[in-house]
Image 1 (cartoon, rainbow, N blue to C red):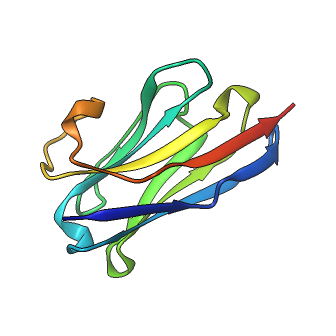
Image 2: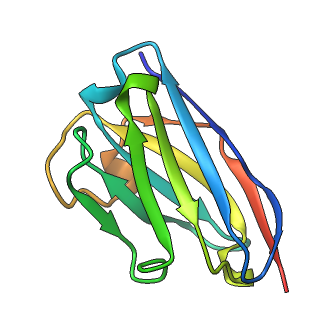
Length: 125
């Protein structure tokens, strides 16, 4: 079993930056791909970014491409989401998730096996 814990959320002004972290425990961190999802107020949870187990392949939602960067440090069992040029529409609860399959282009919520509890990000205008 894998436990995921997010941190780094909070209040930030539009145009600012913030970094989220997700630390895994219970199983070797490098054994699975990782993703970030978010749930904006009144909306379904949506894909934000994904990184392969080795960190070499990354995918981004079009809405965050060029502004967000996903990375991982397998020695620390931690995945990061660096968010820049934040907009009010980036407000939401951000979740990290683990996928036992390292195949490319797995962007659906149902394809992920492990979930964190989420961290709130609020971008003020």
